[in-house]
Image (tube, rainbow, N blue to C red; front, side):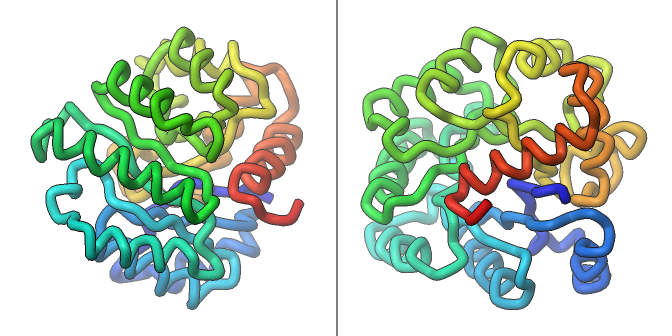
Amino acid sequence: MIFDTHAHYDDEAFDEDRDQLLSSFPTNGIQAVVNIGASIQTTKSTLELTRRYAFVYGAAGVHPNETGELNDHLLDWLKDMARQPKVVAVGEIGLDYYWDEPDREIQKHWFVRQLRLAREVGLPVVIHSRDAAKDTLDIMKEQRAGDMGGVIHCFSYGVELAREYLSMGFYIGVGGVLTFKNAKKLKEVVEYMPMERLVLETDCPYLAPVPFRGKRNSSLNLPYVVQAVSQIKRIPEEEVIRITNENAKKLYGLPL
């Protein structure tokens, strides 16, 4: 069964058929999903999903581009949410210089604070890093993020940076981008890295794999990613599913 380590089923793209779609997962080879908080509001809606579906877990956190909303009071609230029974990570947190808002110093401040929060509550972190390779790595080393562990979500850098994160004990999240023709760097990373550190993700409703590129993504599309990993690693698809499922459970501290 497939484990989707990063999804956003609270997104409005699923408003019309959310329950129908999610209810279909157990009979379509999807064992578990972690819905990821990206703001205070989406952390709230993530918690709602964890209560409604037995196979949905959650992450509590604020995406770098949403950190302008944070203050000490809301950070305390996030800490309380991170202690809820089915919350398995703090995230997604990090830096995003592609959109470059809010100010980089604000992003960095709240990245550090949320890393410290994860240490306090004893959870792994889900890292978002876009066009911010050096600052992300520098902060994670300064804060000894390897102690908490976690996943570099939607990995978009090269083998050299993958080596750094793997040596810190992090997992690397791989999704639909792997099926894109222009994903040369990611394919090199997947070829280089050990299977024991790879987890599957959708980032749905975004980043649907070929042949659905540009359309709404969902966990039901993960077999296309499995196929791509299988071809690159030269192992059967069943092995890709088994290993990545075990990896996801180790990442999030769930029973194997």
